[in-house]
Length: 205
Image 1 (cartoon, rainbow, N blue to C red):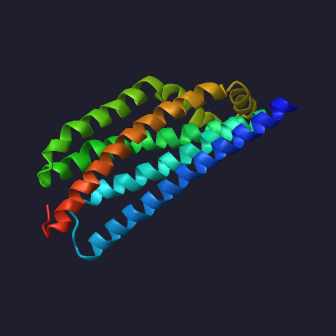
Image 2: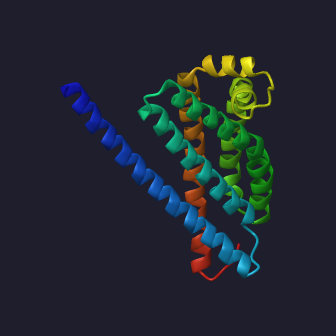
């Protein structure tokens, strides 16, 4: 009884911390969206790729926060597997887009804006995502394609793959991936301050 009570308190603390994290991320998405919209209204497009990636990464990060929480607090085994399957979709779809968004669009934008001091940091983050994809893509894409996207028309195979899904492995993938997303978010904060400092001085990069 006492252990259950303590577990309940611990869960409430975790949920509170996650709620605060989600609230912060939602505010970040709103701020980035407003900046990007305002710039576009004034036909200022020099940072479109960067702010687009900021919003994209924040949304993926928030999705992961919620799903990782759900895996931990869910009691039903099938429910845990469902959250794990969705995590695989989010990670793979993000990785399929990130090389183009970060590795090409943002790097070119940094060069065009003479913000070369950030290029090596961007390359490091892009390399981290590439390495993660290289080592984990096969299992995550298999989960995405054969347990949630329902590409297989064989119900027995679908059921078998869902039953054999290792939730803890996907959870660990999610945590590792979340750290890589956080690395970009931390760098993006630094760049936003850099851009805003220029704006306050009445200059444009």
